[in-house]
Image (cartoon, rainbow, N blue to C red; front, side):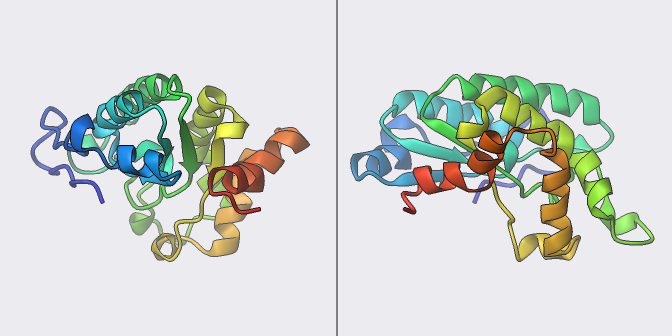
Amino acid sequence: MPTRPSATAGPTRRPICIPGPKSAPGGEAGRHGLVLDAWCYHPQLTDVIALARAVPQATIVMCHVGGVLGYGAYAGKKDEIHAEWRASMAELATCPNVSVKLGGMLNRGAALNFRELPAPPNSAAWAAVWRPYVETCIELFGAERCTFESNFPVDKMGTGYATLWNAFKRITAGCSPTENLALYSGTAKRLYRLD
């Protein structure tokens, strides 16, 4: 689990997510043919980029679309945060050994404070909020390096399981059957050797 950035310290203070390439967990995972699921917050994506470059034989899966923050010092800066996150994800996408899980955006903000709403958001509302992140990941990594995730039971605090997957289906309605096969099962089967 990543070090949680302080809500009061501000975006200039960035805790280190991974100690350094020489002691990186990706090296051991790569040597044993394992997959390293990486999770950090978006200000720490440079650590994952450094790891991916230092250990190119490791298969790394970036979880939760790169941990976009939208609370504390990051609240009210949606466009600025999206631009920073997108730039880091574009750099991460240049590492061919990295794929990305699409999901897990509910708890860290991603621009919708569901706790203050009078009723739980429906799948159309979630799709509208998550679309800029999911579509950007698919654009940058390609469907063959993206896979959806549910992040349940954590996501249960703000949405139901069916609502979550219906939001994803709304986002990918324009994808081809080949892209949808990769996004909803093919990429995960390949990465985690599930066949």
